[in-house]
Amino acid sequence: MTEYDSIATAGLSERDAYRLLTGIVVPRPIAWITTRNVDGSVNLAPFSAFVILANDPPLIGVSIGRKGASLKDTARNIKRSGQFVVNSPHLSQSDLVHQSSQELPEAISEVEELGLGTLPSHSVDVPRLDGASISMECEFVQAIEFGRTKTELIVGEVRHIHVKAGLLVDGKIDTATLEPLGRVAGPRYAGISDVISHRMLQHTLYSEREGSSA
Image (tube, rainbow, N blue to C red; front, side, top):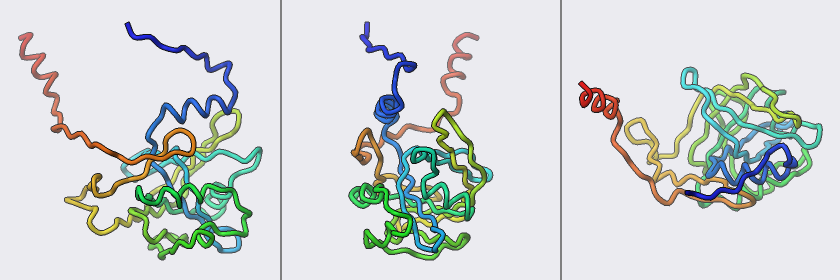
């Protein structure tokens, strides 16, 4: 019999719950988000609670916490302008992603501080990152609050996608060539070392089971 440690979540502090959950849900894809500040400068920050919500229309969700009772710059910019770009970092960009997570005054652009370049977007006014593997231009749809700390799930509709040359094969992204950067617990990051491929399933097991009982 397998042995387990049992943890009652009701007794956990917010920090302890965060440390546990971010060690359990791994690896997490990183949404390296660019937005525009009020003065027009470009804000950049990474978020690793990032998920696909729907295919038609293509909707993605990014969970963004608060600084105390205040919205973070990224959430505030998105809700004010209605636009943002989700950039996907390459494995080699872990240091840049980590450095961009620092909390800087709103007047200071992380993009400029890190010496990163930008490219114009097609559907939104927010620029995308030059050198990102993939960039998704998004329009804000809604924000949904969760929990006592009022973390917000920011929902955006993907309006335009930019894919670095060589990554798109037959309409799909070549994961091995993509070499995405993922987040694990603490200030740690990881790549994908092994990709396990299986054949597409077409109710094979169910059909075999039904045939054997006939």
